[in-house]
Length: 297
Ligand SMILES: Nc1ncnc2c1ncn2[C@@H]1O[C@H](COP(=O)(O)OP(=O)(O)O)[C@@H](O)[C@H]1O
Ligand SMILES: [Mg+2]
Image 1 (cartoon, rainbow, N blue to C red):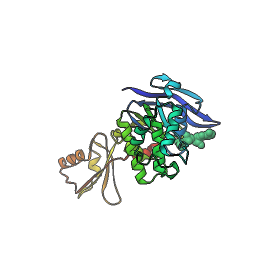
Image 2: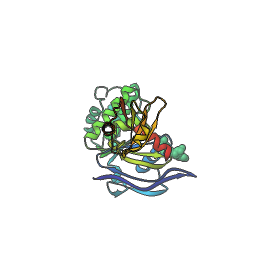
Image 3: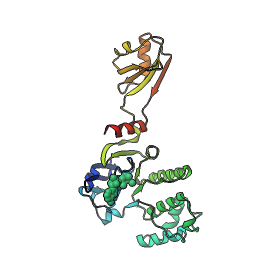
Image 4: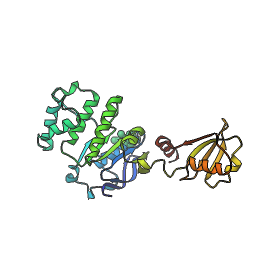
């Protein structure tokens, strides 16, 4: 696994407030990495430090295995806040200015406009754009210098469902080109839908990091069982069971050690000559796990 970014003890303190607290992150090349956390958890501050616009108070980081520097920064495209475009100029005219500033050939403009789905509207003034189109133009602007890494801070904030879907598709399209994407979001759903890896921040501290696909794995499985006879005593003799409890509705809630599943339990019950009339596996959603992480951290 190649690493695009690693941080060691990266910290930012404002007075007595630890906005980012000893952050150790490893971001694999080619990943869509979600930085997930509630408002105020330190996501934007983290991205600001990684982009060299906020001075860390402690710790260090390396892009592409190299210490921070201008050359590394050029390989990164970022949208921290909605960039300022000239309202009366068209998308194309605005990007021409960006291309001049970034010293990118003008020929790059059409490609990025096409990529973000604005080719047809490129001759319309920026001020006539919807919020979603403005956001896509920001992404186009960040893509102009063909960066290896794209950093997006709350990319779907304020957008309607269609705008959100468009941005998500765009992000996944960019990822398919092999670029690494780092996306800060307070929206669990967003991270779950587009990210391959994620880290959870709470009050500036890293409380979890892992693959989105592995969330819920290696977790206890909860099963609801109903049978014609009481089960708890018998279940306590079952090696798969962590604990079991009769619920008010009469079903028994059974928590299983990983990697046992509802069907393992069903098979075991059958071997004990018990036929379950109801068996329901309740897998943990990312949301539930996330809320638990935040509560317990
Ligand atoms: N310039 C600043 N001065 C003082 N406190 C700040 C400053 N910027 C951010 N903070 C504080 O740092 C914490 C993290 O903020 P931020 O990184 O914006 O969180 P997030 O992006 O996760 O919502 C918050 O408590 C915020 O109020
Ligand atoms: Mg933020």
